[in-house]
Image (cartoon, rainbow, N blue to C red):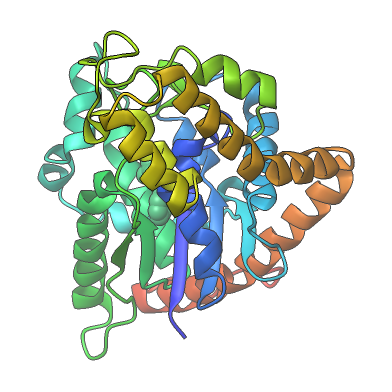
Length: 332
Ligand code: TRP
């Protein structure tokens, strides 16, 4: 069976951009594939972070994933740092990866440009990502457009390692992206991709009041200055959200009422808010139930890590044998 691996950085609360752009698809994939989903807490270290809140954020991210529908019974859910083989495989991979290739990654170029002193970890970020995937010999990786280049590098790393250490028959598969059906979700400001750091998000756990407070002032079609100006739905960021959250009949109604100025933006937003609230409230309730028993959550995560580790140890045994190391400690 095909194996799916994906990861998400536990840098903040899951928001509807993550949910529509990734997690909803991850939930659907668990029906068809053998899936591993990981809170990639080691990747967090490549930017300034607060050690005092990292563990809590990692747990919260995994709670978010479970509340959104990832099941610890169907998928393997865990934190990257719980499986030490990720960083071990990364070291092996750094030696079949060219510095030039790493320096050409657009994400690296963007981020390093704004820094006075670039941490080496930032350059190695995609090597760790390749190790995340290949440690489980996953061949399908559901990601957004922005990760396509990193995946291409993962394939190059798999090829380079195979060429050197498994020349007769490839040991690592070449992982392919599974692009998420939803195109990128813009923030409520309508200016940039939805992102926690820009404060333009709706969190999946927000209350009805919080959701309305965020949608009410959200940017719509700028040509619609007053209620009687007709609007163009395709130019309105909130219309995209209607398409994700409202039933088709409502989407059609919004389309007409906007073009004919039958509804003002505020009426349109009220309908959207109600539909967002309906869709998010079961997630919010599941989140609250999970949070009520943190020990059970931690047990579920530890169990996920054990299952992931069992696969990881098998991979590493073979990798180390082929790379010429002495057999591992008996404790493994
Ligand atoms: N770089 C990914 C992102 O920012 C997160 C990530 C880390 C990842 N390791 C991964 C995604 C492995 C897919 C597979 O979205």
